[in-house]
Image 1 (cartoon, rainbow, N blue to C red):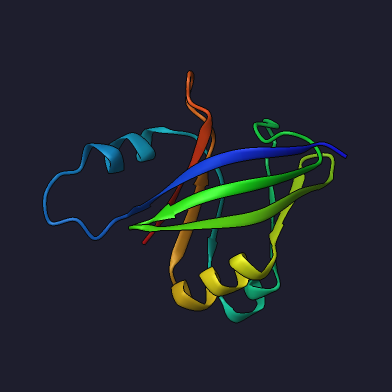
Image 2: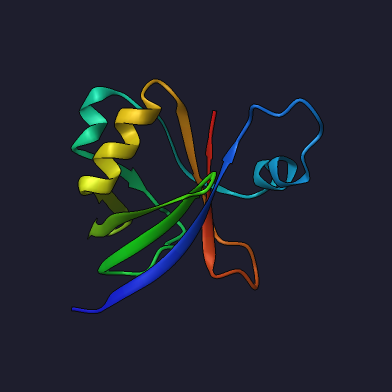
Length: 117
């Protein structure tokens, strides 16, 4: 089984001034969106119809302020992916009731972006 490392940046919408990163995130194609609830602590399944994520098991690296998170992500079937694991569980516990959006990679970038609001 091949394991891929994929970096993700985390963005917040709690800005008091105009933020170019926020504007860029809004221009990117959203892969999945969810309001985080208790049942998401176990896992979050989402579709990636454009298959922007690689097949198999991948590790999604996420920066949240000054803290890094590593989420386990697996392709379940066709274009269905699942994020789970202990890091994901802790992340959801801290971000419950927030809207999370996962965006596709931009050209020449080796990471995906996540926006939490």
